[in-house]
Image (spheres, rainbow, N blue to C red):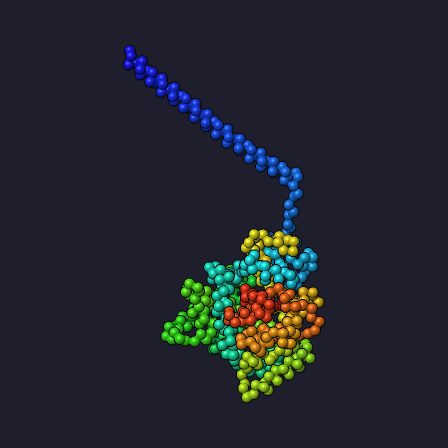
Length: 524
C-alpha cells in the first residue's frame, strides 16, 4: 500500500504545482490583456477628442480653389478652338479672350485630352523660368510623342542636355565665321534662283524654303537641290501633324504626318549608314555638320545614341530652326515695307558694311556685329509679334499654387508669349535695368564689349548697349538674375567675368535652347 500512496502523493504534488503555475500564467495574461485594452481605449479616446476639437472648435482650413475656366466638351475640351487659333497664328487671341472673360492671368481648360492651366503675363513667365525649374518638367502632346518615338525612352531633361552638347559645337567661336560664310553663300544663291527677275513673290513660302535649305545644309550636309526639295515637301506634311488630334486614320492630318515621318526615317537611315562608313574609313573626319556630331556624341557613360534618337534630334533641330526663323524674316520684311524711315536707315547701314568689306565679298562675324540697327529692328518685331506662341509643362511635384489658385500634380501648364506692352510696368523696369547697365559700361564703369575675347559674349554685350537711354533708376545690384542662353562658355574665364560684371551673381545656364526666344521676349 505504501508504494501506491507514494505515487498518489507525487501526482497530487505535481497537479498542485501545475494548477498554481496555470493560475499565475492566467493572471499574468489577464493583466497584459487588461493593459492592452486600456491603452487602446485611451488612444481611441484621444483620436475622438482630437477629431471633435477640430470639427467643432478649430478654424477650418481654407480650401485653395482651382483656376477659373471650363474644360469644355468631354475628351475634346477646347482643343478645336485652340487648333483653329494656332492655324491662323492667333493663339494670343485665344488666351486674351479667356483672360479677359475670367479676369485672371491663369485659367483652366482642356486641350488634347489633358487638363491644362494656361499662364500669361510677365509674372507668369518669371515664375515658370525661375521657380518652375523644380516644380515643372517639359511635356509634349501625344501627337509629338508619336511622331518622335525616342521620347518614349529618353527623358526630356536628358534630351535637352544632349541637344545642348551637340549645338554648342556649332555656336562656338571657331565655327561662327564658317557658318556665316555658308549662310551668305546660300542667301545669294536663293535670291538669284527665286527672287531675281520676279514681279511678285510669296515671301513666307520662299523664306521657309530658304531657311529649310540652310538648315538641312548645316545640320545634315546635304547640298543637292532636288534632294533638298523632296525633304522640304515631306517635312511640310510631317510638321503639320505636330499639334493635332492624334487620330491615325487614313485621310487625317496626323495619318499623313506619320506616313511622311516614316518615309523621312527610311531616308535618314540610309544617310546615317553612309556617314558611319565615312567615319570608319576616316576617323579624323572633321565634324562638318550636326549629323556627324550626333553620330559621334557620347553620354557620361560613353554610350552612343540609338539610331531613332539620332533621327529625332536632327529632325527637331531642323523643325525648330526653319519655322521660327522663316516667320521672323517674313515679319521683318513686312514691317520694313510699312516703315519706310526704318527701311532707309537699315539699307544705309548695310550699304556702309558692303563698302567697308571691299574687296572681300563674303560676310564675317565682325560684319554681323555692325548690324546694330538691323538687330534692334528685329528685336522690336519679336516684341510686337512673338514667333514662339507657347510651350507646355507638367506639374511633377506636389500640388502647386500660383496667383492664389491650385494647380494639381499631373496637370499640364501652358505658358504663352504675348505681345510685350511698352506701357507695362514690368517692361519699362526691364528697359531701365538694361539702360543703366549700358550707360555704366560705356562710361568705363566696367569692361567694354571690345575687351571680351569670346565672340558670342561680345554679341550679348552689344545687345545690352542697344538700350542706352536716359532717366535710369535701377542699379546692377538690383538685378535678380543673369541668364546665358545657347552659348558655350569657358568656365574659368567667361563665368568669372560675368560674375564680376554683375557683382557676384552666378549666370543661370538652365534655360532650354528651344525656349530662348520666349525667355528673351518675356524679359524685354
